[in-house]
Length: 610
Image (cartoon, rainbow, N blue to C red; front, side, top):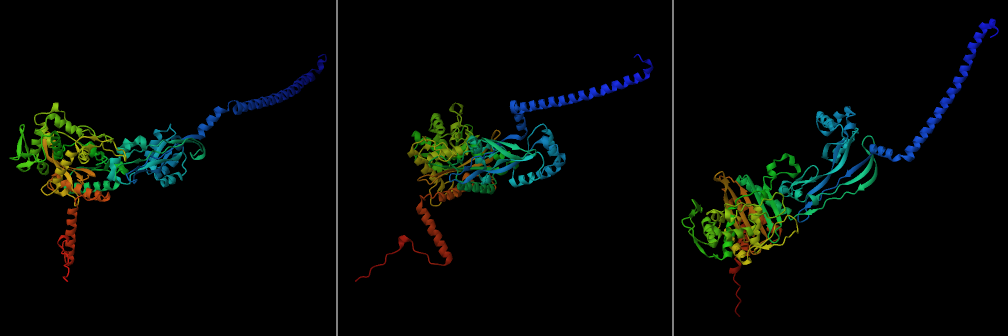
């Protein structure tokens, strides 16, 4: 600073010197800072990688799995239902169900028209369904479709759309067995009939597996099996498919011919109580339930209550025989064809005059049944009918079975027993009538009816075997000349039966509408089948309304076929042989050939005298 005259130069040196000093300091520090930062970052990244891969890898593994690993159900089939001979009645067929991830699918709205067209649904409906579940990851789009149709939809490769295997129930017999089997819902659970009664037994247990899916929902790897699927158990019914078909066909023909509104028929195996056939009309197609009327789903044979009419008379006579107050040849004066019943009358269709006990059943006399019931105490009559199951469920196990109505004696009026003796004032189901008649045919042993093959419940004795046989012989006259059900007779077999015609109750009394019944057993010598036919509200202008006319032919046609199918030997060979000879003679006459001599009148050639 001493050389002030160099002041200008010094100033320039002072300015230049700081510039050189600042340039060297910044470069060094910046290099150090950058290198240090890189070093620290590398160490941090290494430390973090060590933490992620070694120390805390489980959390991030779960996060990754949540995006790609899925646990899927493994569909299982419902058990098959077969008839007593192993013929399939209900089977489960594999189908596919299309589903989608709404979050993913809504991300590609331009594909919705194509998907809607493939699904066969309006685009706005598809969009609405997806929008309503936009926060979900699963929604069904179309369920239980043909696998080929599902493959065509998946071939479009629309993001978020996939399929899964399910099973759909199929009923080969269609409407013929609809009321017995019932049906399942879209989730394959029983809703009615035996499908509902045995749902736990028939239902399988779905399995589960873990899979890895890609971003399009496709399975790229099966990881492991969580739980194996367990198929449902098969169920063998007591139903015979062939007898069921006959029953359904003949009942339909009767409903058509008589103009009736509905009808029911039940066939039981007398020796075991097993239900061999049960048909109702109107019916529905269990393979297409959605298109049917709800009222048609009802199994009328076990749920509908009706007054049994004259089918009650054999039981009234049996009660009196057991009590010892009558015999088969006891005479009853039914003149003049009616008797008082309180302020009303009990009447017959004709004045039958004096009838013996058998005649009361053969002619179906209301007056005669009333005179028989008058010889019984209220307690005797009540106890006997309850032993035969009237007023209580048969405990067949069928869902919704009605118990019937049989009032206790303390609720009877002075006319109750008399009206009940010929089938009014109480309500039963066709299955209850069939069960009671099967007990008569089984020597007084009553079996609880069953729909399962081999489920033979121990019988209980409700009537002496000899009395039961006596009543059967009386009932046999009903189908013979002079009886009320000659149209129920079967060539070559003795048939024991009883007609019934009851007026339908209406507000304040009874209407002019009827239910026609026929209940019978065949063959009489060793009863194999018990059958009840009820034809509801037949048109009197068609074939009339009496049970022997509208229901008797159904019994005959079904039993003829059933006896042949089961190879039951005739118990009336003379009548069968006579009919065969008459048919042969008629045929030969038509052909112009000579008639053969009867075997009994053919002469033996005389020997020549030597």
